[in-house]
Length: 161
Image (cartoon, rainbow, N blue to C red):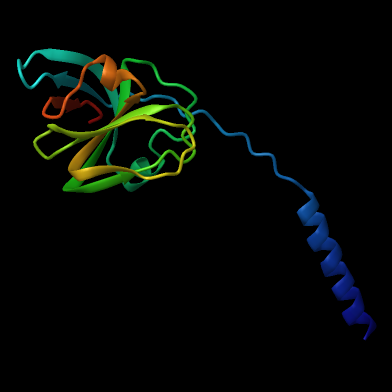
């Protein structure tokens, strides 16, 4: 009987001492990695609106993490999410520390909808409201600054290969 009590007490001491030890994890800033270049064009004139460098999110991991944990992003950079099919898309800002504009594009790379000024850490859904195959995330306010409209289009090159 004593051995059961000793084992029980030892287990309790080990369990509580493990709980008392707090592990301090330091979040590492994710650095921008240029994987392509993107150009936005005006639909009415085919003139260039802007050009910038992009990261491409085309794996499950990249799509799930996106721009989470980043504290800033230069104005000439963005992240392009590339999906294999067209369907309504739902994004949110969980663990995202910077305000963003989300630009939804169809399979022909035409803008179909926007979610502007998405707020950091907001877990509310940001739907495309129409089918989309691409989602471009840029710093908040750029969609308005660039005067983007439904129908404007993009082209991008993947330089990661």
